[in-house]
Amino acid sequence: MNILNLLDISSDLDITSIHYRAQEVKEGGLFVAIPGVNADGHDFIQTAIEKGAAAIVCEREVDTGNTLRIMVQNSRNALAAISSKFYNNPTEKLVLIGVTGTNGKTTTTYLIESILKKANFSVGVIGTINYRYLNKTFNNPNTTPESLDLMRILSEMVACGVTHVVMEVSSHAIELSRIDSCLFDVSVFTNLTLDHLDFHQTMESYWQCKQRLFTEHLFKGQKKDLAKGVINCSNDKGKELKEKLNKYFIISVGEHKSNTIWVYDVKYSLTGITGMISKNGTSFEFRSNLCGKYNLENILCAVGVSESLNISADIISSGIESLEYVPGRLQRIPNDMNRFVYVDYAHTPDALQNVLKTLRDLTEGRIICIFGCGGDRDRSKRPKMAEIAASISDFVVVTSDNPRNEDPKKIIDEILSGLKTEHYIVEVDRRKAIEKAITISKEGDTVLIAGKGHEDYQIVGTVKAPFDDMKEAELALERLKD
Image (tube, rainbow, N blue to C red):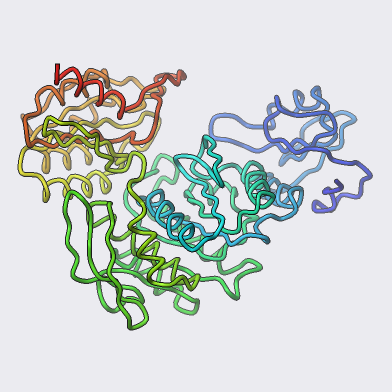
């Protein structure tokens, strides 16, 4: 395929494949050297040439010998454009729904998927837990894949008859041009709270990045005339974004009746949420198996997307109720010992606070919270999460999350600087920490195992070893029973 004309290059080269990892280059392939956080593709150009690359796309002067070198201003932009062309522009053939925000992206995509399936659409999902379509499920190393991988996945979905794709859009994906060639039909904003300052440096930079899903993608692409934004206005950033985008088609959602879609007569319990949703002057009843006010906001975002696609109220209600749980999102571990044990992905201050507040309102006994913080990630949230855990829980177990290349004990020391309570223990070994928390629990107590959720691994140094909070908790409960 002659895709070099995209880069204003006149060449007879027939490019047979595209790569951004030098070790994967095939004979006749195009290698795009992209700068990364831990490595720079420009340092591996010689490897790509040795592997048989027919041409090299790069941002700076590098000796490529007799191999065609194509200089570009931004190789990530180039990779996105080339990848879309190579895979025949798959987002032109799909209804593409993007969901961004600090918290709630995964749950919102699961809710949208459930509703779309009830409407008899063929649905694909790309997100933190996996990417999936039809009856196929694949591991996903990033919330939003690199542009080349993303276009390949979307192309596969098109080939299999998928009509609608729901995709989590991370701030990294926006900043690193992974979605540059995506044409969105609907975009969703859930919320913005403290996270990723290791990458964005400031909250303002993080906020500006999130807005770009709407300002640079949704309302600037080929589908802009029919594009619709769904904004959760239960928070100040949502209200600010709605005001900024007031000349576009925006569906606002929230608890207040000033929103396009709002909710009333809401009741919360450990078995779920019930209430009435109002849209376009009519109301319908809903029931969800999800718990907590923050999940009500996720539900409303999903309803907003459904409204943008003209899906009827009865299908929306059925889709909401059909979702039994989201993996690793306040997921309860069944047991017959009257312990309420939950695994949740909460790894930001706001997410941890939301989950603990939900459990506090619904728990008669004590709350025991186990958490740690990831290494090589935003350090500013560590004492803040400790403060929240101590203020809402009755007992805290501080442990390791994914320490990566940091010393686990030093991470814990930074957590402890914000832990204003005497009711805690430290256990560096996460397996032992889960065991201890469940062992000290009594009938009627709630145990929250926070931070890793659906993850089935733990990263220590550069080693990614099998580890599953759900399985470890189940084993601990079995031992307690014995």
